[in-house]
Amino acid sequence: MCGIVAAAAERDVVPILISGLKALEYRGYDSAGLSVLSGEELARARTVGKVRELEARLESHPISGMTGIAHTRWATHGVPNEVNAHPHVSIDSVSVVHNGIIENHVALREELKGHGYRFDSDTDTEVIAHLVHHLRKQGMDLRSAVQAAIQRLHGAFAIAVMSRDEPGHVIGARRGSPLVVGIGIGENFLGSDVQALIKVTNQFSYLDEGDLVEITRNSIQVYDLDGNRVERRVHTSELSADAVERGEYRHYMLKEIFEQPRAVADTLEGRIASDRILPNIFGVKSDELLRRVRHVQIVACGTSYHAGMVARYWLEGLAGIPCSIEVASEYRYRQAVVPADSLFLAISQSGETADTLAALREGRQHGYLGSFAICNVPESSLVRESDLVLMTRAGPEIGVASTKAFTTQLAALALLVLELARMNGLAEERYLRLVNDLSTLPRRIADALELAPQIAELAERFVHKHHALFLGRGVNFPVALEGALKLKEISYIHAEGYPAGELKHGPLALVDEDMPVIAVAPNNQLLEKLKSNLEEVRARGGELFVIADDEVRIDSDGVRGALIKVNSGGNLIAPAVFTVPLQLLAYHVAVLRGTDVDQPRNLAKSVTVE
Ligand code: G6P
Image 1 (cartoon, rainbow, N blue to C red):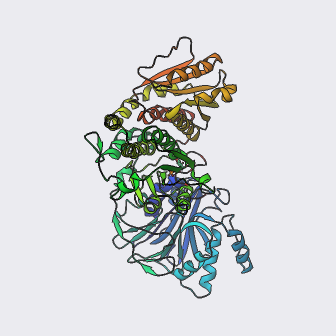
Image 2: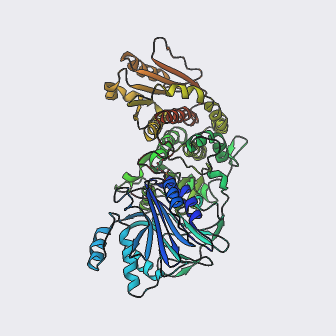
Image 3: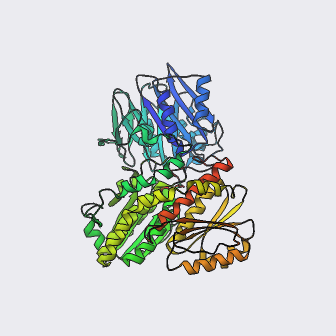
């Protein structure tokens, strides 16, 4: 949460900072601000709301400078108003932007008040500005002061700091939140991710946990946790600047929904040949480790958690390997008992979700065989800290509500499960058929996308609803959860996902003419049971929307609602295919309700705080 961008250059950095902030808006959009060194002065602009508000302010009150730091905020401490917006400044000289939470800010605030500092905001960040200022007054240069200040901070953070008295210098530091260094020609940058800087450079260095960096326009010096000078490798990013553009689509979310056939195809590319999963796609030493796996612990948050839930059905059903799954925020604080020969499997689009990372680090203390990450962001903390990695290759996902990240996670998880299943005696013929099914996934998703006009029409029937219930069974129960999550995230309609068999144990009490019920009905062994559950809804006059496999026959006479047909391609890939109409439904309902589809209220895409 919160996005940081900073630049030291020999040109006006304001346009660079604004463009960087726009790319980082997915991390938070409560307020935005920037500071630049304008001659001898530290100039600052801050506005409530999105980056475009800041841009408008700068048009009417322009400022410019060749050194600058900027921020887009997802409020944690203090309401989203202008006073709480970053950068925070101490005595017109030290300016700080911060992502994360400083847990001991109350104690530090008291201490600094004792030194005569006055606090303007309710944020935890302001203590950093005053602390650095205070240390500079003791005679330290900016780098030493930031180095000393961060020793005093408890919690997770990434920061960028500059001082009126050291023009041309920006100090960055990270502990628990991401920060990358962008290397330009005669100019250098800091950013919360590569996307923020891809328009100005494709050369990046990734900071390690605890690193501090000092950039000027001509130099980059990195120091580790102990203050020693270190070198961090320079990578060339393959991300194209176009990948983060919205193109002809009205929203990023719609673009990303429609990118799914390509994204899933990319996830599978070079990993399957002749209906077999190619050797070593999980890393050179993976074979040895995977063969020893007797239990899998999956940990994730949000949509990634739903992908993990699907994988649990597959793992136990196809590989015969017991699997547990838990949301990361619970797992990290629990005394989990780890069965022998367990693999820790973390799933995260961003690879920076604080709870998932903490769970991974916690897991490391508990004797797992090893850790495996399914992730979409190369060089993210999760990728760097895991033993084995399978990248999803979805490309940048900007819409806060996750879509292509989910279906590509399912594709990647299917690869892993099928490999484990093969190692654990899945019959050859079945293995070949399932790998073949998997390779048809891009095409089946493309077919499901053709439902878009039909779903857009259907969405009109949801616009005035206050609640919705999503039902699924077996491997499609997580699909119901994901459908409900999408709808609530972006349309603000209260929605819940339930296993259809559980309906009679509570939610049925809610079903009446005003409650739309959306059910996923694949043509599998649970179909007849699901039909009985649907009868229960029908008998209460509920409005029933069934997304069913082509061959499924459901008597729709006299039923309020609709039947939508897809070709799901069998149990393995069905969850990914069924998810597509549910994504489209949430999207069109949200558009009709006029919400901010790509940046729904109160949410952020990458949650790097607890
Ligand atoms: C946030 C996002 C969700 C996402 C979750 C986990 O809540 O809004 O869309 O599923 O974080 O993110 P991750 O990057 O770990 O998959």
